Length: 536
Ligand code: GBH
Image (tube, rainbow, N blue to C red; front, side, top):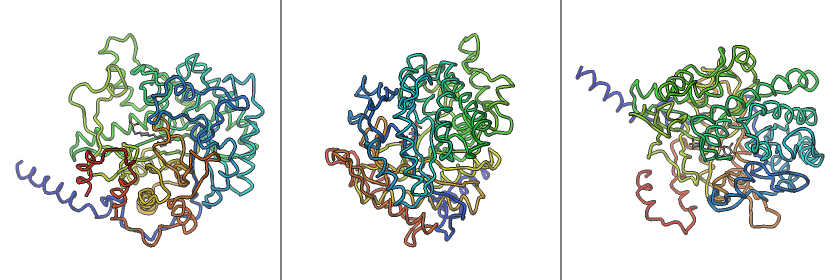
């Protein structure tokens, strides 16, 4: 027994020290001469409220984000708002030109529901809203760029929130009507549709928590109601498209789910189970009903929420249930798996209760941390650079959902601004290297990749502090001047050469300590020193 433990210890040690070997390579693999397959496509992503501005122009009404920030300016780190943002409502021609400069195949943007339907309902379609997106689409097509539309990227009309938003069961019809207006007007030219961007952020963070609009904090109840209606709305839009539009126009439709990779905290069967449970009850919460062979919520989620609800004396489970007909109606309603991926966490089982009671976090009972040694000086504190996590997640999704075609609809890095963005160049190089390994060595079923984001934009609660753009936006200039960063040149070269730059070094993570020089000088530097030492 003792000997066995000793050997395990040695094995762990060897695995840790031997980090550069094969899949254990931190960067996701040695430098490869692999190239991206011929049919593989590249794109860049944005979202309406993060770039458009013109929040009340030409008939648009308030979205839940406009409303949250207008009524609670302290929600945003720099007390800014998305009223003007990058002013893409007026500068869309320059945006299309930038997409063209990058040489990518597809531009993913979102449509603002309250710009199209000012009452939230389809009784009144705003012709100027339709015109704006027609102009943008025509501009893209002019450059031979394929438009990909996200139907819902978090900006619900406030008028629908007033009547319950995603917890109101009638939203399934309202959403389907809205999607119908978009299909009817744009399906002739839009060839990719994303029904929802990151529904977990909408429901878990917006209804269960306070991190996203509408910041309801009705944890343990509302995140489950929201998810239930949202999944039905997704399926309803899919069937509408599939039956009434696809036969005439063709095109593909899917959903974009956010997922971190989950690494077991220790190499124990308990922590491995915690990591698997995290994936099943987070990304799987949305993916299992749509992409698994059997459909419905993941069995672990049903068991855990039912059990907790019983212990807590609820008359019925806080998790609403799909009928057998609904399971079938939702299952298989996607042509591709959209994945938004940024970072990795380590998981272990909780000792006793965690999170608020009741809540999704408490129901699941696992603990999530990040390793202090993982590089990052990102302006987004959660964004640790862990390329191997990307590779492992792609392999997990490929296996779990039976070789579903995966489109990485977002991946990117945040800093505090500047055109010489070494850290972003390094992030993209490492993650694209991991992606090449995922494709060529693991047979992961990835067919396309989008960088987040085309340009700096309104980063939700981080306002304009956190910059994700390939193009820098000068938010102080009257015409919101856009300038290509070094990362834009890197990305353009990957797209045209279909491989990594010759000077890329998979062992080199120094850009993430040097990135600290971009921290605004007003921040006290001393408290950062211990962090610095951990990384060096
Ligand atoms: C995406 O969200 C959005 O689609 C996009 O609009 C946004 O600008 C971009 O990425 C950059 O943030 O939520 O506790 O797991 C990313 C959502 C936010 C998910 C941070 C992971 C980590 C903390 N991510 N989150 S937690």
